[in-house]
Amino acid sequence: MINDSFYLEKANLCLSPNYSEREDNEISLLVIHNISLPPGEFGSDNIEKLFTNQLDPKEHPYFEAIHQLKVSSHLLIDRAGLITQFVPFDMAAWHAGISNFKGDDNCNRFSVGIELEGTDDTEYTDEQYHSLVEVTKELMLKFPKIKKENIVGHSDIAPERKTDPGKSFDWGFFLSSLG
Image (tube, rainbow, N blue to C red):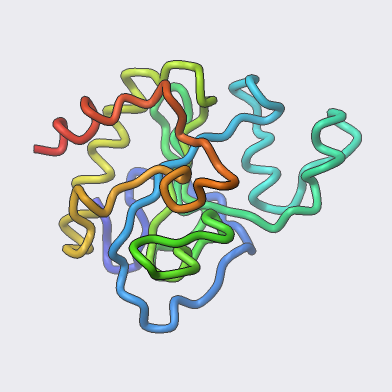
C-alpha cells in the first residue's frame, strides 16, 4: 500500500541519490523496464550497486562502461517478485533518459519507472507479474492520471535507443490482469 510518504509499504528501501524534484509535474505515466547486471545474470546486488553509485568497475568487464552512470528507478521487482524502492514517488527517478511520450519530452518529470529483473528475451516470472500487477493497481489509485493507455515500455518512449521490456514481456496478460 502506498502511504503519504510516497513509498510502497511492502518494498525494501535502498535509497538512491539519483533523482530530481518533480517541479509540480503530475504523475501520468508508468514506464516498464528490464535490467540485469551483468547482462543475463540474475540474483546479485549489482542493480542496487548501480542505482546507488557503488558499482565496482573491476568486478566485471561490462561494469567498466557503466559504473559512472547516474541512473535509478522508483522500483525494482526481482525474479522472486520482491520489490525494492530506490526513489520516493514524489521525486523523479532517472530511468527514462532522452524520451518522449505523446509529444512531451523528458518522461522522468511525469512518470514512475519500474525495473523488472530480466532481459528482452528471457520470460518474466509469475511472481514478477503478480507483484507488478499489484503495484500498478496501487499506483493507478494513487495517481489517477495513470491509465492503461499511459503504461508503456521503455522502448515506447525511447524507440531509437531502447528495446525493453522486450518481446518476452506479456503485455496482453499484464494489462488484462489490471481489470
